[in-house]
Amino acid sequence: MEGTRHNLLVTRSERDLEVQIRDDLKWEDQVNIAVNKSNKALGMLKNSFKYLNKKSFKMLYSALVRPNLEYAVSVWSPILKKDVNAMESIQRSERRERGDLIQMFKIANGIDSVNLIKGINFKYPTNQLAKLQGHKYRLEREIVRNCPSRNNLLRNRVVNKWNKPPESAVNAEIVNNFKMVIDKKVLATQYS
Image 1 (cartoon, rainbow, N blue to C red):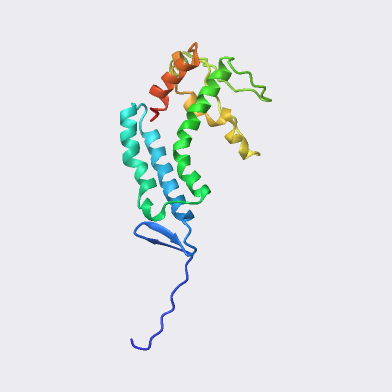
Image 2: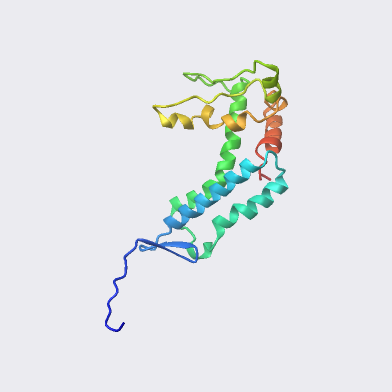
């Protein structure tokens, strides 16, 4: 094999010890990988359990989500603002869901008056089985074909979580009572 030449491939990004590194030494690819893995784990966690108490949620979050964000972080710790924001978005998404639910509660109960062009599509239960499955302010997702950005409007964003609370939560007389119920029964939050 003496005298044989081998050409090395030039690559923009390589993975070594499960850490993605780019030729310009920026960590954007690694941040994206960590964020995507964390979002996947968080989604699996949310979809796998109907109800979780705070202690169980914290334990599962620490075991399944956080390791994706923290693996070898001392090597690739993000310094660019956009990378830091991407990492922090995992935790902010939980708070955003809670805020969305509180806002929908205020709209449904007339605490906040919002002038919407198409209004909110509440799906009132008509048969006995449907009445047992939820509350009177159940939402129906707006079907959007020509404008994908409308899928991110409040009424479409909260449909799945909003339809979970029991009737007693949605009919709560004050916002704080609603917050307590959704923290316990809907979000299984990690808030202290």
